[in-house]
Image (tube, rainbow, N blue to C red):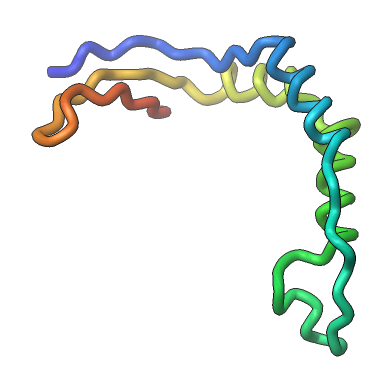
Length: 94
């Protein structure tokens, strides 16, 4: 049987600062013109992506989400032996 170990999400401040810097440096393509109803035929509209990036930069509270996940969702890791890939460390919630 696999050795099951408790796991907590713990993202470093440095990682989150780097993510924010990368989001601030996002370059957006020119918006293409499409007929009404076909705006998503080549992907997500630019304004939707810009709103999402803005939310991740300034609206999303990662520490709150991290705390809620760690508090409400018991998480674990275990090494699972596989035939072709050796031991794989698997993260799971239970």
